[in-house]
Image (cartoon, rainbow, N blue to C red):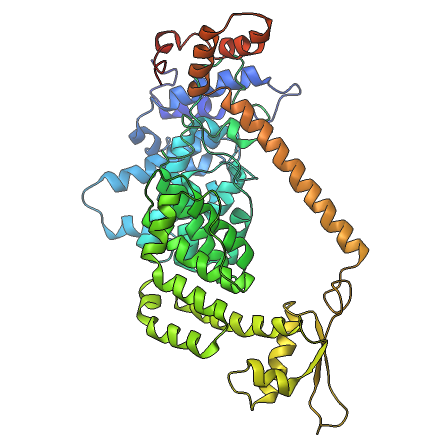
Length: 513
């Protein structure tokens, strides 16, 4: 039975009682906090939604009384009760529409909550938190204005997990919203954070498992299959995230990061087939290889052989473009582009093909660096420009390559305007406008060291989480049965004991595999 009173006036003080405010001189221990908040959640689950929306005596609304920063869980439950009320009704009127519409009263409450909620408290109500996030996205789409949901959802994701390093269904939802809104740069605070973990399926009631409210080194400690902070994931979810993310990076012309995301999609395990999402990723990957590297890329080594054959079978026009690009015939490349124009349009890759054509000219200029120390602009125009007679356009183009960091060279203009300008290539990477100082090289080394250290910590956390999964415990039990229980098995026995006794009936479940 609920410990909450039937009277809303008596219910309110109980809702405000946890967490204690102002905070006591001696903070609650993790054990006490965990016990109290679990009791709060249990009781909130027993309160009827109609009671939460009925307000208190005198006409006060709970959403105006509760503080989302402090009373996060009661506020969240009340907010969802308000959302469910109009949505559950069959007769939606104009007042209800205005209430839900962006800038409406309920919308503003939802956005306020997402900006201020206590990230520790929502770990205990993950499914409710996710439901609110998905509602914000749904309302924005219904209003044909996905942009208004981008920032609130981004803020909510970063409040829950500042690293966003554990993949969730919200990652894919957010990336798609950014793509629909063409909010390319708004996506960077999420996309730029590497994914190190996926929600795991933990052993049931593992002994010594960390409490949700404890301080964790990794968000994967509280984002798992049972937390509700992510919907159930399948292979399409992360494929879509990497494809959407790559498209957002393409919109920002961050080719290297886009290429990395596409490669993640291409090499994902597929069995003996491939998803059409992966085929679309492969098409863009082929084109981006030309834009970034100036030549067709070899298929990543870890790509499934059957999937690779399927990619090439469906994406033949793209591989044909790559081969023509490699041959170095500008006129034929233009012809291939025109012949396949409908293909590029149907695949929404026309803009990327135009970048390929521009890259062809850029790499044609860079190849001259291997043969010449300096060359006149008129000669470069003759060799690389679509209009060899337009030297002014070629000189402007070369200046833009140097300014954008594509070309390590210097453009020397003659005092006599009757003489053409000269492009002088840098003699080594340590000279010219792109030369790096020792301080810059040292800074890059420090950044690489920090990334390696960060990756090492995530690997340790992954190993620790793996040891708590059902699959690992099943394997460990089978291994223990096959070997003598000697001193060398001490650590393995300890890991099995940490999982608790919940696996007694499943000990032989995978023995024949």
